[in-house]
Image (tube, rainbow, N blue to C red; front, top):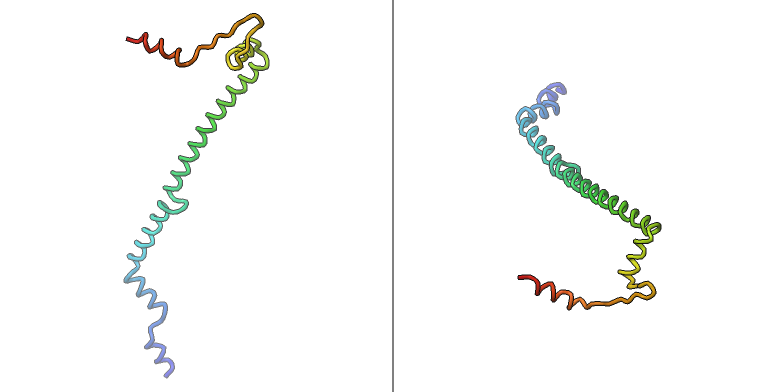
Length: 121
């Protein structure tokens, strides 16, 4: 009696095998599509990688620009410490200083623009 009862009930392993036999290809296709979508659109996918590469390239270009600017400013600092002509030029133009006996004549900016505009045909 007990052995007849076991033979009539299908085994769990055979149910799974039967299910996979009928739906295995579809499940495999869904799984592969899900992996592809995750690899393209996921947080570490292709699109995120491209965005990160673009950000890295932007940061590198900014770094190169800042390094170049830093070198130029370092050259200016060295020149200001050692070149008396540059120091005099800055004192005369920016600070409007003059040597003893010199006279500074200032021309308003409105009068400077008018002759240039009149000279054009």
